[in-house]
Length: 74
View 1 (cartoon, rainbow, N blue to C red):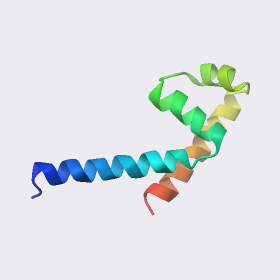
View 2 (cartoon, rainbow, N blue to C red):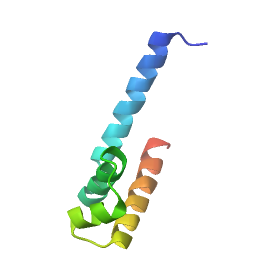
View 3 (tube, rainbow, N blue to C red):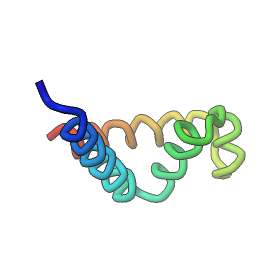
């Protein structure tokens, strides 16, 4: 069993990897992801912010999640 400092270090490393992976996303995917996950905006709100349709937002988020899975869990 790991002690708490080791667990905190592992969490910090995972967070850094995730933030780096997010920063490498294409701009519109990154913005859609941030607005959805971190700002709690609805797909309609994101569409208005990005000047696109709700279905475009769904596609951007799908591609962003897929890219993060590939880079984060490789």
